[in-house]
Image (cartoon, rainbow, N blue to C red; front, side):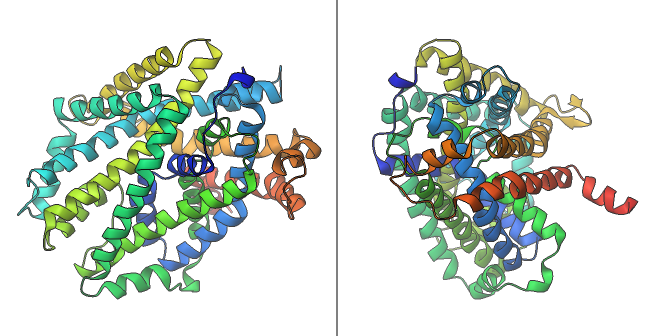
Length: 455
């Protein structure tokens, strides 16, 4: 199967598709929120260090697995460790991707609703209370959220059935440059606002006394979340790499561009927020309430709101495509079916799951599991349990199961590319990254505070 496997058609396609895999809503709203609630530039400094010393080694490990096997996430572990239980890491990634798609496609659909509202001028003249009430009424509704979810799933499905080169790569070559152009335009507009430099100072001037264990753990968690580690996306996309693709260079370029998007998101949000005296908050309230209110107070507010929500929709689409491909590639290869049938099976599954997730925050809000609506439960289980565990066991797998000779041959393209810090990379993967992810795991579950209290 690997001999017939399609690959990305160009180096640019490799970079843009893989960057699209990493870049998502987490870069646009989660990163600024994490910066805002963890000491500003102090968090940014720790975040960049985590990307360099932890994120990059783990990313390279996932790219190695995919490129070496040219198989889907589950199939990769079956090939590298046949007849062992390591295959369950792959299954974990596929299942996590599918569950994430259940609620992520709903949120992605919300971005389309707000693109429509901005385009039709429906956001004009609204107060914060109006934005709050309107968002609550919309997100808890029945048909409108489901309609936009369906539209988003259909758009993703069309790209996926077109294949790797004509679908994913071609879409990435269009969407990623547009995303960067829109983001830069919004940054420029934000920097022209009164008191913009105060927000920029908060983002870029670190106060080292604000760095503590909580900030470090939060920065590590954001680094892995932002790079899409542990969910099978990087393994799946790397399985479409050609033999001449340089894993080291690709990982560095993707990490750099992903970090650039996150920083630009901060440049877009903090000057605007400080200019209007608004503190960035988390989640839906930042994206669908606070920022639209900020944009509507600017000249040509509806235009900037429209551009912003197009940016969000593009970021969401690139992530949904990569997650969809994780599950599609698994169904296609493991069950020996066509891409169209596999994609249709996955898309229908995502839509049905999306309906349930959407209704769980609205019409059937009383239906909960472990005290959480299904929407929140999927978010909690994937982000706080499945992804950290997946990333940790990938590090352990590469660090202990893969022979260093095989690893080095793959990382250097059989000796044609230099790897100056190979032993350092192996050490970080085997000992540092796995422990760090373990700390993130117990911190995300709230166990760090509990353990500290016992001590």
